[in-house]
Length: 196
Image 1 (cartoon, rainbow, N blue to C red):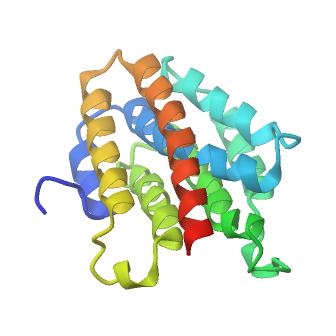
Image 2: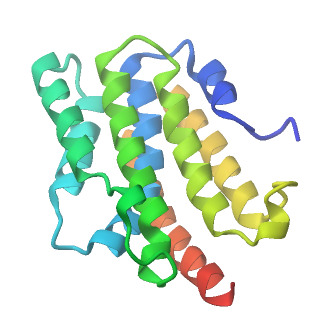
Image 3: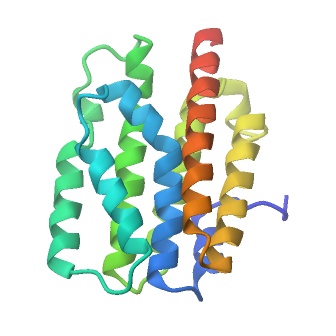
C-alpha cells in the first residue's frame, strides 16, 4: 500500500517543497478529472465553473496572481457548488452526480487556495475530493477496505500527477491527461451507478 497515496496528508507531504502554483496545478488536475461529473449534473449550460478552472490553469502557468482576482473567483466558486443538503430526489441517476459536482467545486476552490496561500495543505482538499467522488459511487462492500479498481486508479492518477507537477513545465501535458481521464472516470462512474 506504500506505493500509493492514501490520504490528503500524503499529498501535502509530497508537494510541501514545490511552489504554490505547482500545488495549484495538482489541484486543478484533480478538478479537471472531476469536471465531467459537474457538467453531467449541472449540464453544459452552466459554463462559469469551466471558465474559472481555465483561469486557474492560466494562473498556474504564470508568475504572480492578483489576490483580489483570486479572492473574487474563490467566492464565486462557492456560489456554483451544488447545495447537497437541499437536493430533492437523491435516488435519480442524475442526482447521483451531486457529490461529484460538489467535489469538483471543492477541488477548484482548493486550486485557488493554493494560488492564494503558501500553505501546502490546500492541495490535500483536491485529492480528497477526487477520492470522495469515487467512494460515493463504489458498491458498499468496498467502502471499508477501499479495495476497488476505481479507487486504486484515482490514487495512482494522483501519484502520477504529483510526478508531473514536480517535473515542472509539463502543465499542458498534465491538463490534457486530466481532461481525458475525466471522461474515462465519468464513463466508469455512470457504469457503476447503472450496475449498482
